[in-house]
Length: 441
Image (cartoon, rainbow, N blue to C red; front, side, top):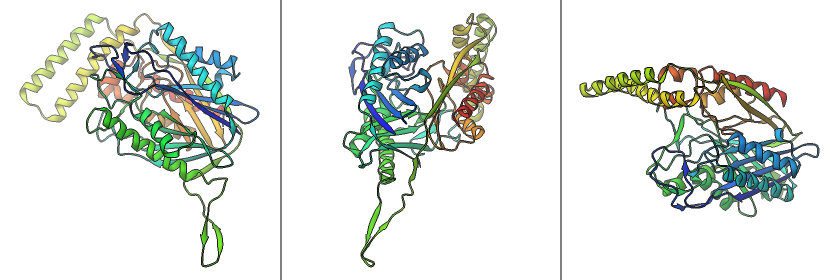
């Protein structure tokens, strides 16, 4: 296989509005660290694939479409063979999702295509190696501290026959929200720090890539919400990924030790992961995600006022913590639901969304999901597909908002309030993902 990787700077000018938090008081006032489009190019001699991840909050379908058009022109990769996702940093530019800002979209699309072209140009003979390690210390379920998180850190390494690492890809599921709305500096957040650590630890000309997973209900656990803790989290993710990549390095090359009692060089099996061999394949399909519906705004406003009064009264009475939290979740959901219904009224019954699948070799698969997806949804896809070695990548090829588990609507809270989609949309997403994965099996 031929493999190439590249990172192209996509940092917007200072003064660009930031996306991710509604309460920001100003535009960007500086650049703490640059944003990149990072591309991994694969060619098995029959088919070419490209996996791209950008330090952005999301990828609007219009941005993905334009970048794919440019990539189809040169180096000539079919759109369904190109996955474009975001790290979901909350300190990148506005204008790449939602309505979009045409100048920024065109410039970013050209840079994304440029990253793929450079990766294509620099491709060399290499072998893919895959392993998984556990990482549970830096994340927490943001809807329930006792709820599940994704403790899986997937690592894909590409090494030349001579042992040089071309690229190390890490996939983990956690919101890039170490920093809060008071931060007005552009930054790739902890995913960017993770890539820098990968590149520093492995050295040479390696390119680090970080893909975010199904983390709609998972947030980082921080000491302080500052750049120091961004680096701490990134160093944990990047350090673990780099260490596993280095452990995978001997696969297909050599791994032996000197046995001085026997005066022999004895083989040492590599237990960290496996070689990935076999043909590449890709497919995509679309499904209809139904929009939510609800009563007129005046009725929604009255219900919100009633719930807020109930919450105020409960706090004044000093109700038990469990009861207070349940009412607070209803208030959060009602506030966001009013906003979401205002955005989706008159939009029609559904939104068409793409789900993408790739086979990177025998037994190793990728599924690209649009928008924000709960951890449980990613695991349901893994279970229903029967694919254990599956890289679940979210924020891929579009950013339509949250796909919420049906139970989240009953529980309340932010995600179920702000989603534009009806409760049944999540199950339709799962079905589409399982179906498209079957096409690349």
